[in-house]
Amino acid sequence: MPRIVVEVMPKPEILDPQGKAIASALPHLGFDAFAGVRQGRRFELTVEGDATDEVLAQARRAAEEMLSNPVIEDVVDVRVEGDA
Amino acid sequence: MPRIVVEVMPKPEILDPQGKAIASALPHLGFDAFAGVRQGRRFELTVEGDATDEVLAQARRAAEEMLSNPVIEDVVDVRVEGDA
Image (cartoon, rainbow over all chains, first blue to last red; front, side, top):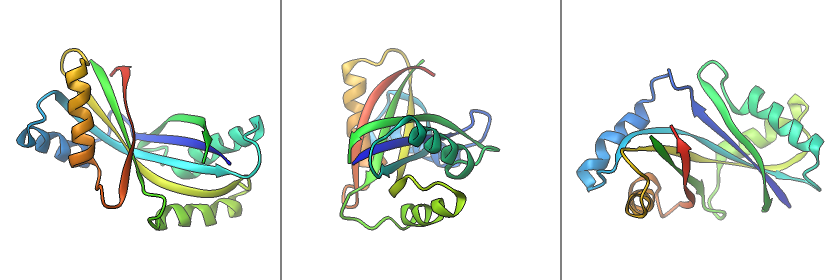
């Protein structure tokens, strides 16, 4: 069955305490190449049948209306990704 | 500055109560095309300087050792994604 991947990130102007905590812990573990970390969410929606344009449009609406909080988050990607 | 995206999902055999809750709520809101939902995490690591092979290798190690819990999660993608 095809899968639609939806990715949601905190808006750039929104504080991301989890990302900040990870960013400050990384150098202590020897990871020194990174200037910052942001943490968001990734959803996999399994599609019954084919991932038609209508299904993709429905996934886009679900991403905006249900999977993300539009006040503090951006939907950064909605894509079909092969078989589950 | 370039950005490395790390994506982490619960292992297929691990129960995902948040994904299940979303999956059962979707039809009530008119989204009827989806057979299941899994919820994972997406990280954006901002790189100081260039995203060299060494930096990407460091991101892969950080993904396995710090950003994911290998007992219950899989790192499903680590990729460079343009400028922040």
